[in-house]
Image (cartoon, rainbow, N blue to C red):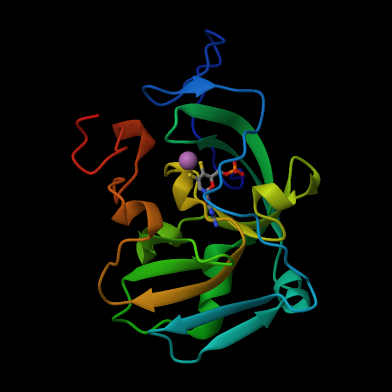
Length: 203
Ligand SMILES: Nc1nc2c(c(=O)[nH]1)N[C@H]1C(S)=C(S)[C@@H](COP(=O)(O)O)O[C@H]1N2
Ligand SMILES: [Mo]
């Protein structure tokens, strides 16, 4: 049986933990937020899927929670060099959410929108991977407000600024468009294993 979803290999034999180059393991869970932590009422919470879709969709909290739920264990790598290993995330697969709006064939990129105005961008095919989740629980507890509660995206294979907190929408696009940190010079691809921290990768 296939484990769901896969997390990256660890060097079990040597008891040595593998983290991407330039990263250090932390047991803590630091909070990294640009600006204020928004307060969100579940009664008025909405999640909108728009742009290049056949049918624009707006989900309420109960509708979101009615989607198939799953759990995954994954590492989390912040570009400021901390990595938190083996996070247990629970929520709904990205692909399960986006399909509700029936994406048009010309849609190839996505801007993820958040309460508070933060944005990040990724190619649609990256987001369709099994390990990309909208999560509302972390390590067995409801996701704390400062960590993105009620709902955040988790994209384990990218630096954590792509894991948008307080998500409230997906915009399907034909062309790529830089999000908040991407506009400020962070690498658009953001692969921690390639140390794609900054645009020119010189730092
Ligand atoms: N909406 C929003 N999402 C965000 C951020 C933010 O400032 N606003 N910071 C990003 C950055 S840089 C990181 S490292 C992670 C940190 O998540 P954490 O605060 O749960 O550790 O969230 C990402 N998602
Ligand atoms: Mo970060």
